[in-house]
Structure formats: structure tokens, C-alpha cells
Image 1 (spheres, rainbow, N blue to C red):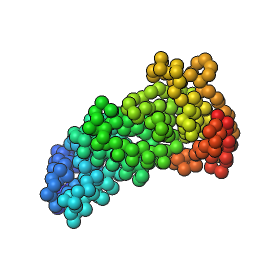
Image 2: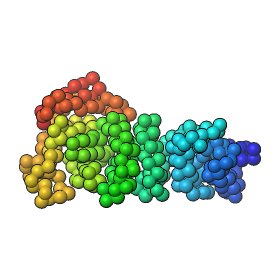
Image 3: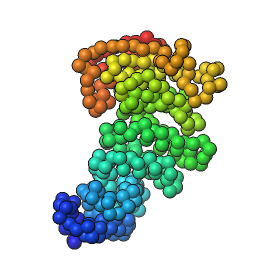
Image 4: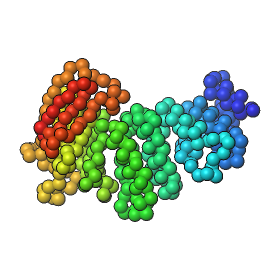
Length: 318
């Protein structure tokens, strides 16, 4: 009862509480959160959600997050109780992800790349899939970093680990490609293209879990990208620039002699194969949330692509 009263007061009026009291409250929350037999676990989860921005200064903030990650993804029957901690923990994770995004994303990346064990990595990936479905805008600014962590988790040099997380990683990639038009995956040669807010495209090879090269043509945020049906072209669009860029991304004989370099585009320099300008007026001005819903590429032939921007439909030859 004391933790209930003090915790809720501190979450709302922490400036009135002494440092020593805040430390005691934070430590009590951490203890209850990690105690599987405690009847106050749900209370600790709720207080984490309400006051995480306060408690993080007095206890190990990353360990608190990791405890919530574990509770949020636990589906074992013996874990289920009348306290219903799973749904409560998932709500807390969503709230903390939105209000403490930098620390949250750092922890998420660390737990994918350096998990305590394979099961821990799998549960973290399940959490990522949950966040993509529920809070895609929280992940969006950190999507390139998150994708890099997922790709590295598939390192073929660690065969047991790769096989253990392959299903979870595949699920994440499916959700990401479906949700974020800035990411596309070409299954036949296992290439993953990830657009960034700086205008670059990072290309990965999932077979080797490595970054292949970076395509730098746009100077503004990329709104969408898409592989052609044969995987030999990649188109990218920046609404702020009013430009579609066409890139040659198929393997060539020359690429064997220049690993890590983008494929030759048919001319000197690093310019894209084609630059196609367009103007749809005010329709191109939209929020990131709107862009996730209103901007899409659709291939209508091997070298012909349709770009939809709200109600505007443009067709380009690649």
C-alpha cells in the first residue's frame, strides 16, 4: 500500500519528493518487477509505465526495460496468472517506447546483437514485431539501425544462433516491408534495401548478413523504395525533391572485383542510372504517418513502375 501511494505521488509530483525517497521507491519497483512470486508485480509494471522517466535515474534503467521485455513476450502457460502481467507489460513497453525512445531503441538493439542467450534474442525480436504492428511511428526514425541489428543477428558464422532466430527475423522483415514503404526485400537473392531519412539507401545481403554498399543520390528523406520483378533495378522516391531515382542493383562481372562498391550505373561517378522528376503539387506535402499509407510503388512490367502519391498515379520507365 505504501508503494502504491508513494509511487503514484512521485510519478505525478516527483519534484516534491526527496532524492532518497525517490531512490527507495525506484528500488522497490525494481525488486517487485523481478520477483516472480510477488503479488505486487502488476503494480510495479504500472508504475514503470507511469514514471519510467523518473525511476531511470535511480536504478539500472536498461535492466528495468529488459524485465518488461521478458514479461511482455512471455507466453509460457506457467507464466500466466490472475495478475495478467503479459498484457500489462506490453502496454508499459508501448508507453515507454513512445516517451523514452532513444534509450528504448538502444536497449532493443543491444538485446538483438548481444543477447544473454538465443531465447532472449528471439523474445526481443517478437517484441519488435509487436511494436511494428502497434507503434510503427516510434520505430520509424530508428528503422535503419534496427534493420542493421536484425541483419547481423543472421550471421551464418553462428549457425545455431542463425537457425534459432531465422523465423523471428523473417517475421520482422515481413512486417517491416508491409508497414514501411522505405524498406524492400528481394527474396531470390536475399537483398534488403533500407531507405534513410538522410536520403541514402543501405543495401544488405541476408545470406552473408553483411552490408553490401550504400546508394547516395537523394539529399532529402526517402519516402519509398522498391525492387523490380527481376531484382536488377531499384527505384527510390523523395517527395521533398520531387524525384524518382532508378538504380542498377543486379550482380555483374565487375562487381566481383570491387566488393563493397555499388554496381556501375552505366556512366561515370556515383550518380543513379536515371533521375526522373515529377510534380504533384501540394499532394507531396505530408506527414511521415501519411507517407506510410499514401506512397507506394507497384511494378506493372519488368521495366515499368507505377508510383502512387495520394490520388496521383505516375508511371515511369526504368
